[in-house]
Length: 130
Image (tube, rainbow, N blue to C red):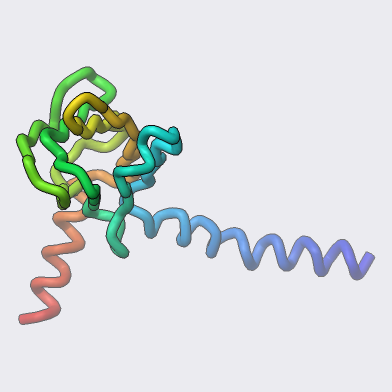
């Protein structure tokens, strides 16, 4: 009986922390793990609000299509590194395409939080700084 009580107590104590941890992420990156895509390094920054793309070859263009089939990102890059802020993207799944000469590398970024929540957080930071 005591072991059941201890298990229930631990579950009740740890469940709120798991929810809080899941809400910390702004976005999730689902990398393209294809052998042909290994030349493009895809990652998020520490705060997970900026997409970082790096390659040894030239990245010509990057665009993203959201769940409503609208392009929210459409950049002509012509560089080997790209930083794309994700704060302006709508909540949900975005399919990114990085164009490198004959190759198109497709990967997914899922935005977990609304932009309005971020704006409220930024306003709180500004008030606390002043």
